[in-house]
Image 1 (cartoon, rainbow, N blue to C red):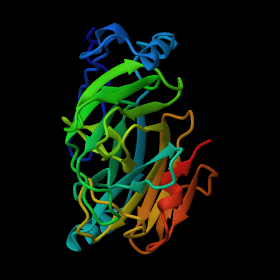
Image 2: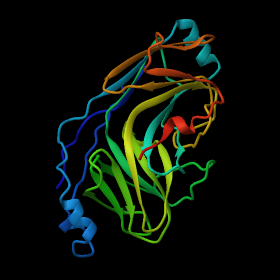
Image 3: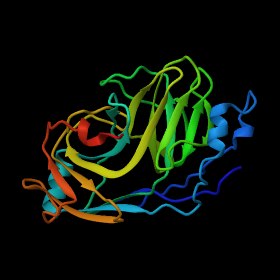
Length: 276
C-alpha cells in the first residue's frame, strides 16, 4: 500500500527549498521471499501508524548586516546537526546540512520525515557516509534488510516511538536515520549494523547550529564542533528564535531550551543520546 506524499522541509534564506516525501509500507504477508516469519507476526500486531501530517519545525536566526558581510567575506558556512536517541553507544554524528546562503533572517525548517538507510562502507569516525539504500519510514516501523546489497522491506513493528533497522543477513553494514531536505534525505548519524542484529532509533527534535570555516560537507562525521555553536531543544514547540553576532556569538535570551557549544567541544554525547 502506498501512502500519499506528506510534509515539507526547507532551508529559507533568500528563497525556499521545498520537499515532498512518499512513504511505502507493506503488511507482513507481502514480505517477499518467504512465508510470514515469527518476527513478522509480531509486527502485524503493532499499533496503526497515524496518517496526520507532521508538525513543521523552524529555527529562525537573525543577524546584523555587518555580521552577514563578515561571514560571507570569510566564506563561513552555517552547519546543522540533528540529535538522535539510540540504544547503541557506537554511533557517530554526521553533518546534516551545510550552506553559505544566509541573510539578515535565515530560517531552517523541516518536518518529521525520515528515511532509514544502509551503507556498505565500514563505520569509521573519519569516513564519509553515502547511503547505498534508503527507505521512507515512520516511528513504529522496521526496515528489514534482506540482501547483501543492503536492500529490504519496511513493515509495521518495533516500539511505537522508534524507528528500527533489522539485519536479516550475515553481512555487516553502516546504518542510521536520514532526514529529508529538498529532494534528498541527508543522514544525521551512522551506526554499525552487524549480521542478525537490530538497531533502534528514537527521533529527537534537538538541533546543533554552528558557524564555521570548515571543509565539512553533509554526510561527513564530526565528533567535535567545527565552530561556535548552539544546541537547541524544540520539545513540543514549532519555532525557536536565535541571533548570531560575529564577535559575541549566539544569543537566545538565556532561555533554558538552548545551550552554547564552544568551538572544539565534544558533540558526540549531545547528538548521539543513549536511550534505554
